[in-house]
Amino acid sequence: MESTLRAKYCRILPGIVLTAAVLTAAHAVAQTQQEKRFPSGPKPTVSVINEYGPITLHPGTGNQVVVRYVLHSDKVEVDASQSGDRIEVESHLLPGANADLGEVEYVVLLPAGSNVMIHSNSGTLSAENLHGDISVEGAAAPVELRSISEGHVHVKTLSGNIMLLDIRQVHVVASTVSGDITMKNVDGPLVEVSSNNGKIHYDGDFGDSGAYKLTSHTGDIDASIPANASVDVTASSVKGQVDNDFPLQPKAHSITITEKGRSFVGVAGRAASSVFLRTFSGKIRLKQR
Image 1 (tube, rainbow, N blue to C red):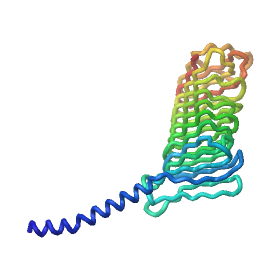
Image 2 (image 1 turned 90 degrees about the vertical axis):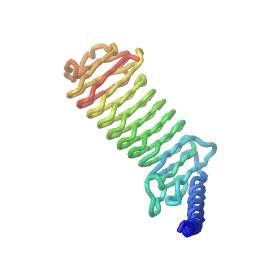
Image 3 (image 1 turned 45 degrees about the vertical axis):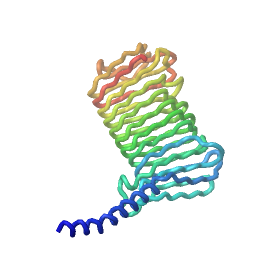
Image 4 (image 1 turned 90 degrees about the horizontal axis):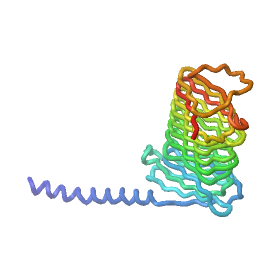
């Protein structure tokens, strides 16, 4: 009996080892970095659509777009096309793909002035040192944008947190359902951000002109600004508490009727930028940095 089982095991073992070796080899091949290159002008329009996995954008060299990617299995492939200065890259899920097997990691090098649209359901969506228009969409994917100047930035997520750092002279529109929004050194002619349930934190000076609108439903709003900020502030919460720790001066003429603990209005410096803070049941706090 024992010898029979031993013989049977010896016949099965090579097959198991071979199967494991094939799977390991396939996984290793899938994990190998691949690359696609596209010649372009200085301001191409680039679209990267990814079902699962991160997308990272960096400025490259010369007039070309370089797309580097890593496939996590043979259940996904990358389709890419170019028509003039319009370049489209998309992850194509094959039968049997899921969130793990369908993951693709992208790193895209492109001219700094490119107009870009990126999307992923999961995996960090990030960009830095660019000055073209940027549109970012994600479900649970967190978003990190750093050192962006000029142009327009549009960000939309469901639950992914949004982080905007050193965004200068940019038209910004960002919204999330349940994620948090963090902004540091963000200014522009129009900055409009909203979160339904998440928190909003702003740390900067609100620039020397422009309109800033920070709104939430149940999330808190926290703004920290320097003593030399030049702002015209209106803050209100329907059911939440409103606190002001910044030395604002009374506004000469205001159509807003204030209620202690629920709203306040005031100006500082030349009142160069208008700042509107509003939440339904969250708390609002304006403080001096």
